[in-house]
Amino acid sequence: MGVSADLVEPAFQKFCSYYRSVVGKQSKSRDWDEGWQLWCQRELEEHASDDDAPAQSSRRSSSLERWAARKEANENA
Image (cartoon, rainbow, N blue to C red; front, side, top):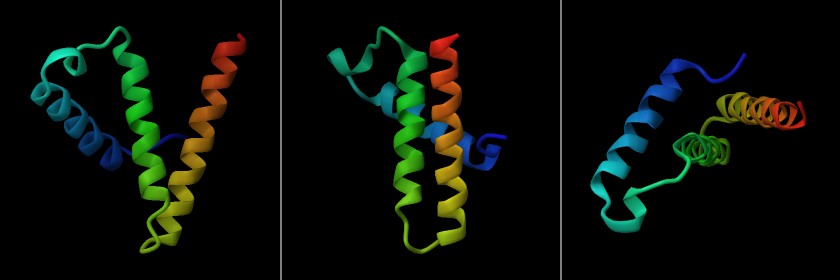
């Protein structure tokens, strides 16, 4: 269950590169875990809206739904 490594690794590299390249307030975070989760959510939503790959879009969408369900369950625990 979850997102495959072939999607996570490029997203992680992009996340790290972005935050290494920015300066000032944008380069700091109070909660890097939450920042990473938000980054992943945006990546999934971006890929889910691609019309070029409906099968992958569906898979990514369901991954996002599973992530949201796990997050909600953790918050309610």
